[in-house]
Amino acid sequence: MIAVLTGDIVNSEHYEASEWMVVLKKHLSKIGDAPQDWDIFRGDEFQLKVSVADALKIAILTKAKIKTIKGLDVRMGIGLGEETFVGTKISESNGSAYHFSGRIFETLKEQKIKLALAAADEKLEKILNLILKLALDFMDDWSVVSAEIVTISLENPNLQQQEIADQLGIKQSAVSQRQKRARLDLVLEVLTFYKDIIKQA
Image 1 (spheres, rainbow, N blue to C red):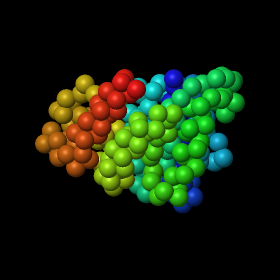
Image 2 (image 1 turned 30 degrees about the vertical axis):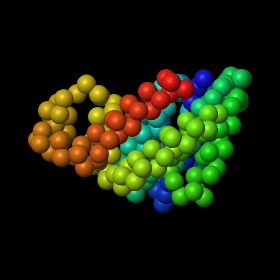
Image 3 (image 1 turned 180 degrees about the vertical axis):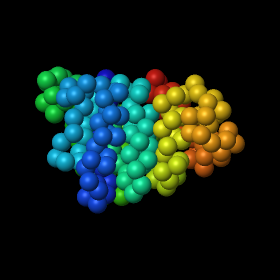
Image 4 (image 1 turned 90 degrees about the vertical axis):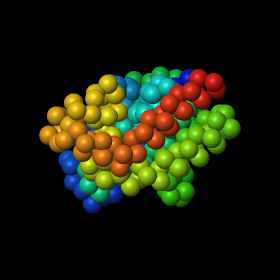
């Protein structure tokens, strides 16, 4: 099983592509190689292939990265399934993971939600999508500062608050406040729950 994320940049039409493209490309380059593992197409749409275990963390991290640019956000559909054909480009690859990802992504605008998941296991899909809806209630409201603290915390899970404070040039107490405001504790709980439930599936 693999996971495929299909997404687009929300509000990109109000920005120059150069304002967000560098951030997105740098982020995706850390995850895999283009164009086999990820690609950007039709201006502001992208697709990437990751392990099932890492899918949600990468989706939330992608959201946080893009939200470090004021006014921007990202919409993503995660598909969990098989890969039956591997092309030289991700756009040529095929399998149920791609179908699920594309299908759920196409419904996001209509549902007015920015992150959802599709899988063959309907019960698993239902549970995870309910949790994502609840998490989006605060993740959609992340400020640039909150998005920045989530990005640093997820990319460097072993960093202590003081080390993050030194990196940002702020006090340790300010790091603690920012993490609380971003609901980082809940983000980490959601990620732990996701990993546990995926193992049982």
